[in-house]
Amino acid sequence: MAIVLNGSTGISTPNIDNGGTVTASDITLDNTNPNITSSDADGYLAISGDSTVNTGANIRLFSAAHASNAGDFSVRNDTTTTLKYDSSATKWNFQANDVTTTGTVTATSFAGDGSTLTGVYGQGQTLQDMSASRVSGTSYRNTTGKTIFVGIEKRGGGGDLQYSTDNTTWVSVAGWPSASGSYEEYYAGLPIPHNTYYRISSGGYEKWTELR
Image (cartoon, rainbow, N blue to C red):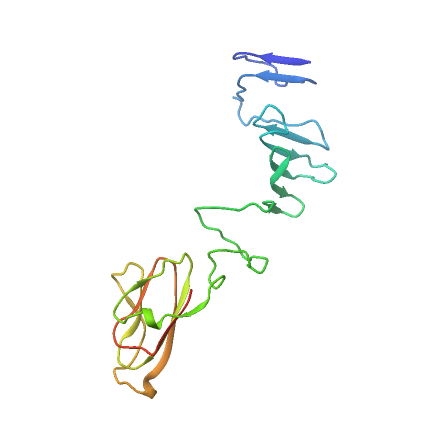
């Protein structure tokens, strides 16, 4: 049996029971906290944005008594699952799809070795000798897209290793004495987040390295 509604139709009875198809231009549920439920106690409810439940973007809401997917739901493209929530494992499965957000991801732990992660400090970076391209008194900006680590070996001569978020206000993290000699030689290092600045305020240096 099919029910076809071509316009705005008001139905005073609380339920429509139909074993066939209900076709309507629009369906508006105007009751307080309306419900859409399935009478298939061990099946699923399918909703699609296309003309069939197996084409276009569609979702499946599995019943609490479903044999293999109890309480789960899945998002599909045609018949391919692109996102699934596993109720028994309380886990989201993005089916090897990339996840992009402009917000913040907060987690108590991450599983895996991180070998395919991007934008992670230390992953895909190498320790580089930057001595030939760095000058004391000149500020440098980290534009690599991830945190780098800057290490300076300096033999006195004054000056500080400094950090800034805006290239205007500087914070001195370590300083060297004005006297120069083997007793005044030591190393200082600092992680530099993406899009922030670093420099040696003055004086020469022995070696400048960066993990980047």
